[in-house]
Image (cartoon, rainbow, N blue to C red; front, side, top):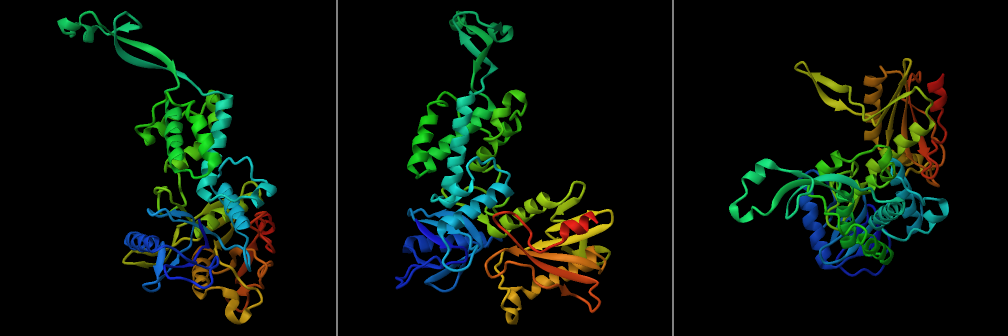
Length: 422
């Protein structure tokens, strides 16, 4: 397992000093990443950036990549300054994924987060297996289903039309339709498919053991032949309530529910999430946590455009968050980037393009007056809100730059809730 941070540099050449910011990988893995980068880049997805023939730089994705040669690269987020503890980075990522994906996780306490040592993909498989173990303890749901068969004795309903068409050599068989009570139903077929995939993917001894133990419970259930159709038939009534917790894990493992990953689905043994999208969803969770009832929060609003051309809108403006209540409107944008509040000479690390973007939002969504917010992750070098940025001398349109605590979801130094209520 090779541990690196997002945006780390990888090389196939020997290195005198390695760290989370740069690693040496086998030439076969290096060549495979280069090919994948070109392939995905042609589709508009940036996975790696080529620096030269011997160096490449990872983009802003986190998760696990496993190459065909067996090299496993775990990419962790950069959340604090200095030499970051991989277990803490992994715990922060898992907590963010759990909240922004609404995953029903049971053991995300502070103590357990600090001791996480398995990759994100293994953690997802572990949570699926734990949820499945609980489901088996509560009972696998069976149901009646109609089955057509040829029997030597009469059972159920005789199919008259098929019986009359029987050839003479098979006149001793009855064409019947009868009810069978077993576990062959859409929910269990999907669980069987996910379990088979986990058994083939996992490298963790505990996950391997538990997956094979649970496989004996579902060995008579066939795997799903049409995942999409079976998900549509998944029942959520009172009798199936104990299946609710496992459905998100089944959907993620089978590739039916991965709203963050631009790469689309779980490709082989690789699972990646774009960290910018993860942070945006996490900020949305934090806003919903603190806003009072009745306030409307829209994510990725797209009702305004930068200009009009030949009677139509052009250059759509899409802020991450738009809050409105009784005429009050607030625009917010989330950026996964570390700021340095003590480095004013370098503009704290804020991109000028981001301010241009917020200025356009303020003109189109707020009519040129009001307050907007840029939200960044809280770090030791950025632990309180910066002084206001005014876009005019009177301060009619202003911008606050505020940190978000990744552990608690608290927006530090903002009066957002007070303004909305007032």
